[in-house]
Image (cartoon, rainbow over all chains, first blue to last red):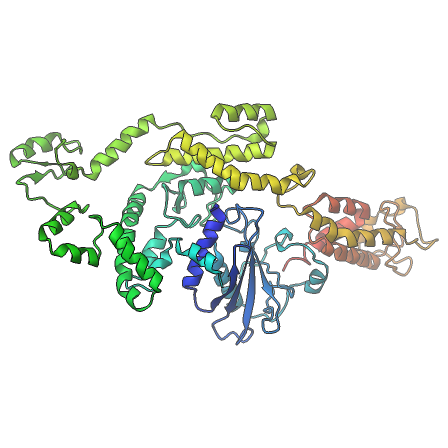
Length: 157
Length: 435
């Protein structure tokens, strides 16, 4: 088994075994794409009683994934799974978070830690707003999230 | 949920979660502390960084050769500064040895109630298969309990450091070697940590093991230096690879990647307590070549001119993403500027028009009043308001491009827009995409 799939196999094993509260595995067929549900556990009025669906996409052409490349993580918009309101989450589900970018990524991150980071990113948020320029971005962006050059300026998250 | 085949596959993966759902659940934390965070395997030749994080030698060397940062905290570090973490390696080795027995022991009572019959069967088979002296599961001790003498043998074979054989000898406090009380005083005076050879093979303590490895270090191969590949021409690099005894075939970038990987493998092996032979290392490089190297070539070869671009650059998406904005710009350029409002460009530079808001408006602002030719743009009519609008247009255009920092295409399109635009839009474009 190649390095990446072996690592993913381990993560999957671990995820089947146990996940932190508020994180649930929905689907993980093979090592291409996994779906997980996350919930915000505290009483943040923005996210009360909501569940959000996360899609993890692991690139297959780069088996060195995880060593140098983060998985692609986006929120999915489904009838009962809205895109959470957050100044760093675009309404098409694309997330602007440094650890999901090439620069901020580190191989010690894993699916579980990403979910937890996103949970805490939502927990700490009080602004009921989309990022600046959301409409235009959602309308015009045809790029894969990893090709977008975000500029990470907000260190409060 | 995972398919059946997938799940069977997962059963073979050893992981710290194996301890959960057993009475020894706290051991999950112990085990995950003994695993490298990069490869999630047990540490192999753990090395400690300047920022006091620990990773497998090969993992940290690979990471540092990619971006020179510690994967744990993103602090910059160098391979030269890595140091071995011997005590951790011993802890890992000891835990690995104890693991299967412990796990078997821990699973026993749980299995009866919860686990599938298949697992039960497996465990029974395992018990019968490796009924070696090291396994001290309940069942095996029960079985051996009838033959009490055999039980004694089992105990004495344990690698128990506290074990004191009843042989009438005393142990040297320094080297742990056993000798008569008469001999011990003289021995202590000259003890160098190496126990005197005895016929008892079991009393070979750890000290001798560390000594044998330290003597091995003399014959250890030298670590390889990293090359700055830009200094090497293709032929020289190929020569270098053949000198190292590894394949010198393939495109230039693959050569560099291969060399980098070889240096990592080689140097990690130099750190190892039990170095492997060059042949084994080459097999590992072959494995890399088959899995990662070839895939890398496959993913890069279809892009002509890819050596000029970032390896992550998605060329197709780039051209499709900008298709609209290019068409838009062309369309704008074709729209004829209204006659009469064009003044000679030397009368006032567009730069001033933008930077100086106090400019008197000669004509009412018209957003379409500019030409794409740039330098022959209608400058006097370009009031501050229209300049604002112009740059607003550009910002919208740039949004389509996301940030113009990467590809060559945007550079060209910007050049077309003229100086005015660039100035203002560069300032403005720093905002819209930054969430």
